[in-house]
Image (cartoon, rainbow, N blue to C red; front, side):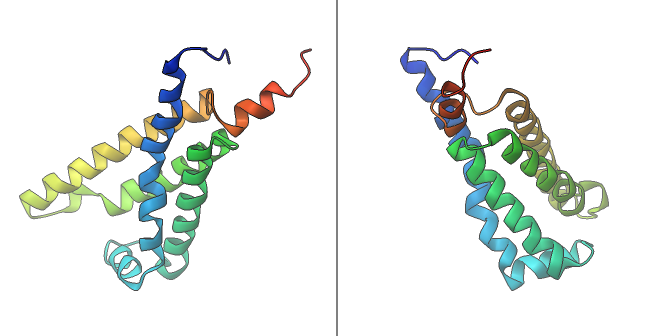
Length: 142
């Protein structure tokens, strides 16, 4: 990937941080009894196992993307986190109360957008000003 010499390259780490910060900030909720109970109420199987596992995946993937360290793998971890969470936790089609269905639809669509962003990072990588870019600079051209 070509690195740009202009100030615009600083937007890339800001974008990574803006995208992935929520995954890091909300990960601790997956280790709380409230988070596990809410997931169980939503029909998540084996919530005492899967919800904390989702927290680990969210935290590791988010930190990977923020730091730009093996960001493609981190982005795939976020996709792995988002797909089941979107289907189980934001299943607007199963919500009877219209206002809550709209709220869950908003979360569902937001997660679809996050999946799209994670897929872009999984394909293009971390970009400039990242550990991945530094590692790439150290490689000998072929």
